[in-house]
Length: 295
Figure 1 (tube, one colour):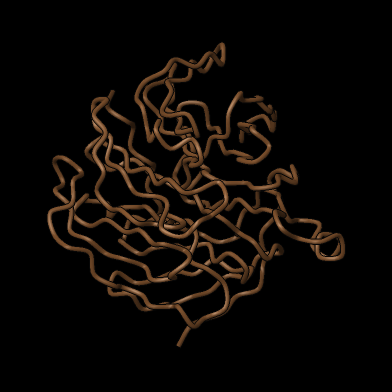
Figure 2 (spheres, rainbow, N blue to C red):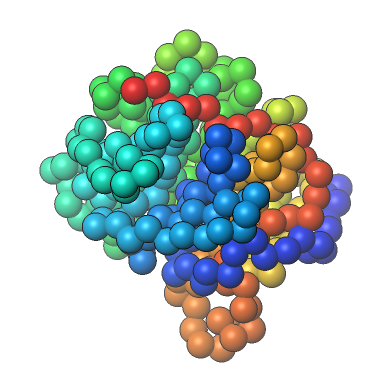
């Protein structure tokens, strides 16, 4: 039986992003970073001071990976770029489907080995137009093809298990991974089949105990799954389209989630003033920080 909890958290930043996505936490500055993909913005919130900045981008971007205290790797519709934190300058790093201008980046996460998994999709969400790639030391390798809406890319703390989904199919996949390289070492299997459940499996993150936390787009909840695929708890949020969770705070013991108002009509937006905000679930978690990308 799934335990269901009402929202007892708070709004960290009421930005009203069209499509808030890709949150990550930088412990060096106690800072949360996330994207408004369709608005071509990178958002920054310092948890120590409450200072908020919005960095305009020349392209749509969706995933940020820490490199070091001065640099970030971001995935965009025009490939992978290294971003200088102080200046905001972008330096081209690697091509990602440069022959597919109709596609853009979507979900992604850094593996404990320092490699990055990044998914792509059609800007019009066409069926099976995207893929999932492995990026290590600048080399880009396609690992899964025919993905419509790649999401839930995350890993077990020891790096031996990878997860992902195609949100259009709504099956959470589990695959064995080489912990030293971040490359798949087996064939994917279905861990959770929720094709007939309301909402879509969106972004996910794995906690220190190996439990997966998933934002369920269209259902207004964050679900927690055991390593064997059992949904053990469900946390309601005041936005019907949560997109991705992230562990935040100096001890990785808080959980934030991005949301979106993309596709909502005026009445639906009026009924959910938190749609597009960065929220925090008011719960204690035992998370882990996203690893740095090894450039």
